[in-house]
Amino acid sequence: MKLINMLLGLSLFVALQSYGQVEGCTDPLAINYNVEATENDGSCMYENETVSPESSVVLPDELTETSGLIVIDDRVFTHNDNTDTNLYEVNSETGAIEEVYPIPGVINIDWEEITQDEDNIYIGDFGNNANGNRTDLKILKVNKADLFNNEAQVEIINFSYSDQTDFTPTGGNNTDFDCEAFIAFEDNIYLFTKQWQSKETSVYMLPKTPGTYTAELQDTHNVQGLVTGATYLEDKKLVVLSGYDSSFLPFFYLLYDYDENDFFTGNKRKIQVSTSFHQVEGIATSNGTDYYLSNERIQHPTLGTIPQKLNYYNLSVYLENYLQGAAGTESFKANNLKVYPNPTTGTITVIMPEHIQNTGYTIYDMTGRVILKDTFSGTTSIDISAIQPATYIMKVDSKNIKPLVIIKK
Image 1 (spheres, one colour):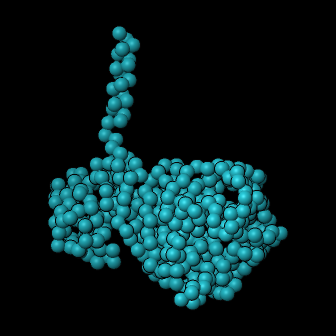
Image 2 (cartoon, helix red, strand yellow; image 1 turned 90 degrees about the vertical axis):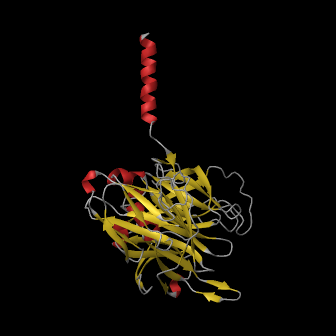
Image 3 (tube, helix red, strand yellow; image 1 turned 60 degrees about the vertical axis):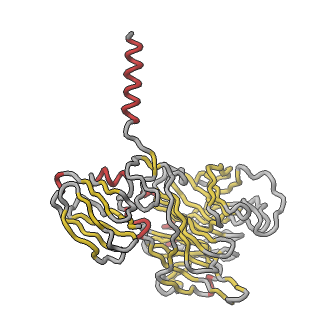
């Protein structure tokens, strides 16, 4: 009898543990947002969106093949992907080269990407689109302080792909073992491949310490394009990929609110870029809302020369709410506010704790213009049927309440 009681107690405990855990889409920006969901299951779907650059500057002729980008202390750095072994600091407003930092004792077979951690930069000499059969794939590791003191010493991380067994030449742009994007996260490096055949990207993991390794396949996801760059905010669980499709139409690919290092378990959102026929190569951010994209020079049969440029984008409308901790269930727990339905066609209901009743609120559009201003009183229904379909921010007059996103369909 005691054993039965113990088992019943265990069953009850498990039931209590799982009670109330509702899996679903927890992102208020998604079209299938579930206000009752308490656990993000990665199912969020989004409307098609297109963004345009806020500004663009032409880069000097020394950077016609600009490939990777990073931002260090608000300074933008890039490099070329062919023979040149320098790292360039560029002025983000004019595109002019501010400083040149040589990387000594190395050659540039195909430097395709640069990333960083707190102390080091990593340069990926792993471009493999010529024949897909390179056996000398490597990552250069350089201490930042040494580099900026012109005392750079390079350590080498050699690797091969765990599932590449056939090294027969494939011909140009015909392999799924090319790579132009990676990040350094905790003790490891994560590669995001550029798959010319499948238009997917695979994630491979290897240590970020010098040595020779087999990069182990972690996951594969269909991005419907060619991934050419990656940037991330480790503490925010945010990775943003850049790339373009077969018509050179660029895109951002946002990955956020994922589990640990399983980057495709959270929200996945593709945002098109309005600038057509741009071979986007590098991407960088320092805050998760402001982004730089670089594109290298190409010749177009009808458009002529498309110059190498540094382009600036603001993605706050898509990411600011999440970065502030106000996306999904965590925000409702922190704020003790519940807003539903969201998205809405006309009326939202706001449920709030007693301590913020009779507190004012303001609804803004994304330009900061005030759309509606009033005061909460208990459970409140707010009629927004008269405003245009768009994304809005609701701010509450309380220091402990973070902004909430409201979607009017």
